[in-house]
Length: 208
Image 1 (cartoon, rainbow, N blue to C red):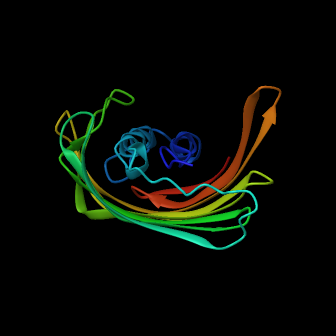
Image 2: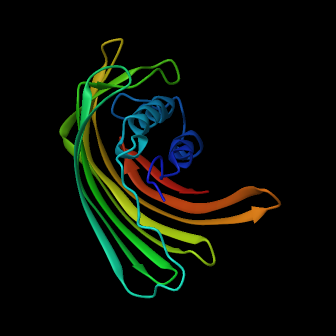
């Protein structure tokens, strides 16, 4: 299993499109539509938008012994529109029979990091000081059920291409259940979860 775009970003973005309140109401200089654009841009240049080479060890039939794997991450990666993001942290996996668990702890610090255009806005991010993503996953390879619980917290500065600027604080809790199953010759995936907390002074409480 390779950890690349592992977090359901579309659900996080939808949290602000559907749960952000009155789109004409400004909080900290941003309407909920603009907050949605900030979140979409931030997700695009966040840790899980890059392939960090985090690969969990494979489960081998008949092997019941506990296996662990620890990887330290320290990468500076280019952002789509210029600038960079520094991602540092650790990834640890545990395997015991069909059960697999993953602990991911990453801090991302943006440095003039610009995403692409979203909702007509293009944002550049800088760490203030940084944002931290902590995730815990458990998976059973027999039932193909994966459960996730984690958090995203920190402060970052943003600048819009039109010169507007500000700062946002994020304090989010994320949880989800994933179940994949074979349907004839294709894979169907069901995902449910919840995102709660605040970002850019917007309260979030979304089920998906």
